[in-house]
Length: 302
Image 1 (cartoon, rainbow, N blue to C red):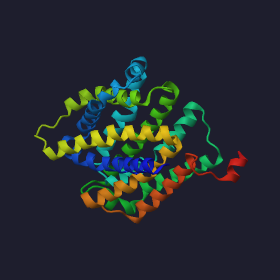
Image 2 (cartoon, one colour; image 1 turned 135 degrees about the vertical axis):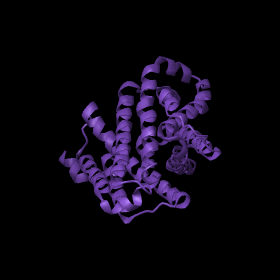
Image 3 (cartoon, helix red, strand yellow; image 1 turned 120 degrees about the vertical axis):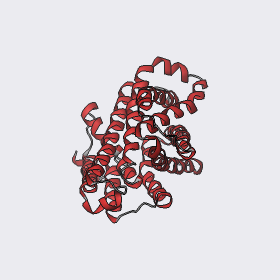
Image 4 (cartoon, helix red, strand yellow; image 1 turned 60 degrees about the horizontal axis):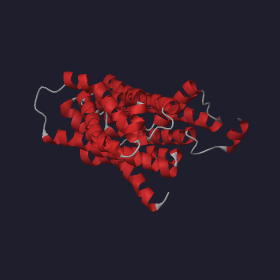
């Protein structure tokens, strides 16, 4: 990558890493569903001017149904699940589980699109899921990874919500590849936020908090919508266009680093050796499963 593009790459990782912090601050007062609903609604409003770009509106109109649907899979449902999770487990742990997105994406592509991974990618999937399993069953981490007062059952439920969210991301990736190949990326980014906002409109209304919400919580949601969703999507698609999807995907490795730092500095969260060890295992598995790192012997064997 060029120096300018590399700067955008680190900025994207920093923005996505901060999303867990802002979601925690917002969900603490709004609740999980209104947090997700407002996030995508505000992001859609911020991105609406993108339709003025030549060809974007026409492409959206042509593919409106699949774009709106993928918004639920790629934004609406996952954002709600992560907003629930950060209320019960640390933002650092949430971000580590989010790093399994390439793993679930590879499994979904294998089962749905028959995109069978090579030998080294198969090994990566195995290593990655071993890391996730160790992270989930590691009792030594519950005291530090769960939010104060959260039971082990609630902690496990929150971790399960994270993994369900990453499964939605995997489904959305394969759906996009099958039904939205060739679509203008800005049309997909903007239209998907509109679809997610429409899908979460009623739940946001039903679960709207009864007590007044502070300006700080409103500010957190505005930040996660503008910086971590709207601007981040534009940066992500720019990096894909200029450096390719494989290099863009490596941002997944940096997101937990920023999220862990934000959690420590702004929320007083703890980082346990167990979390770090399992995080390294997951990252190694992800690098292999995405093909970013290949083992020559296993590649030749397949």
